[in-house]
Image 1 (cartoon, chains in turn red, green):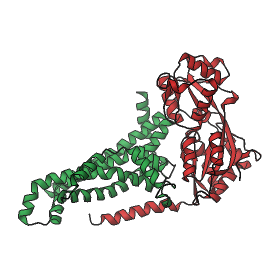
Image 2: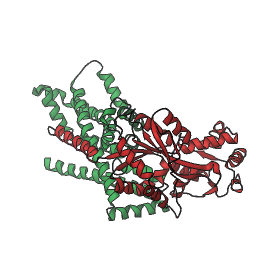
Image 3: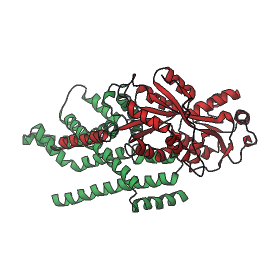
Image 4: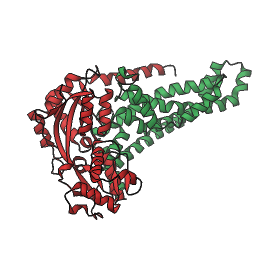
Length: 278
Length: 234
C-alpha cells in the first residue's frame, strides 16, 4: 500500500511521456466515411513517408468535426458540408479551404424496392415517392455532412420528413455505418456516401437503387484551423500535410485507392478553386 | 449462428498468429484500464476507510452521493471530461484531449465512486463487527483500520475486480475523450464499435470474444492467487 503512490506517479508520467514522445503529429478531424472506407489506413502511411508527419484522425460527423475545429481541438479538417465549411471560414475559425476530392451519395434500399425508386434518375423525385408510399427511410439525423445533404434534398422535394419522425421516417442519430446496419435490419431506404457503402460488410438485402443525379455530388475539403484563434495549433505541420494532399503525388495517391474494384474517392484539387484563403 | 462460429474461428486465428494490431490494442486497453484502476483504487479505498472511521456533518449525504455515482453514465462522464479537456475548456492548456491520459482520467471518474461505495460498505460492516473488540484492545483508529483492511482484503479484491471490469468494458467515455485514434487511443471496445459500424460483424464479435477471454484470464488469475494465499495463510 505504501509504495502505490509512487507507482501511480510513474504510470502517469509514462502515459504523459508517450503522449508527447511521438511528435511531430497533427490532429485531423474528419468524417466517418473516410475512416469507415479504410482510406486513412491506406493514405496516412504515405503522408508519413512523404512528410514525416504523423496524422492522428478523429472520425466524427462533419458537424462535430467543424465543432472540434471551432474549439481548437484539431489542427486541420477534412469535411464534406460546403455551407457549413464556408460559414466556418467566414466566422474566422479556419482559412485556406481547399477542395481536394469528391465522390457521390447514393440512395440505397431493399432489393424489393417498395417505392420503385430504381426506375428513376432524379433523387428528389425518388424521395417524394418514398414519402408518398410512406416507405421506411433511415436518416442519420446526426448533423453530419450526409445528414445535412439529406435534409436539403427533402426540402427540394417539398417533404417535411421530420414531421413523420417515428413512423416511416426513422431518425437514428448515428454514424453512416450504424445507419446502414439499421437500414439493413429494417429494410429501409437511406442516403449513403459511396465510400462507406463500398467498405460496408453487412449489406443484407440492401442495394444501390439510385445514383448519378448531379445533386448527389459530394465534395470533400480541407480547412486549416486558425492559429490566430488557437495559438497552440500546429499550423506549420498542418500546412505541410495540406500541401502534400494537394500536390500531384498526393492527388495521385488518392486516385489510386481502390475498394472492391472501385475508387471511393476521386481527386479534384485545382489551385483556382479555393475559398476563404486569407 | 453462422456469425458466431465465424467469429469464434476468426478470434482463434487472430490469437494464434498474435496479430500485431490486436496485440497493440489489447495492451493499450490493459494499460489504460489498469492505470485507471490503480488511481481510482487508491483514492476509493482511502476515502472508504476515512468514511468508515470518521463522523462529520454531511457524511450521510456524501455516502448517498457516492452510492448514486456508482451508476454514473459513462457517456455523460466522457462528455464532461471532454468539455474540461477541450482547448476551449478550463484545462485546455494541458493539451490532453484525445490522449490515453484523457481516457484514464474519464475512467478514474467512473471507477472511484464504484470502488469507494462497495469498499465502504465492506469496511463498515466489518467495523461494526470488530469495532468494540478493537476498542477493548486499545487500538487507535489507524491500527484498527489497517487490521480491517487486512481482514477484508478478499472482499476488497473483488471490489477492485468489479472496477477493472467496468473499466475494460467501457466504450462511451473513452470514445469521446480518446477519439479512437489508430495506434494512439484505439482500444478493444472502441475497435469493436468501429468494426460494427463498418459492417464487419464477425470481426467485431471476434474482438468481443477476445475481450471476454481477457477478463476471464485476469479473474482466473486473481482467483488462483487468492486460493494459494488463503491456503498458505491457513
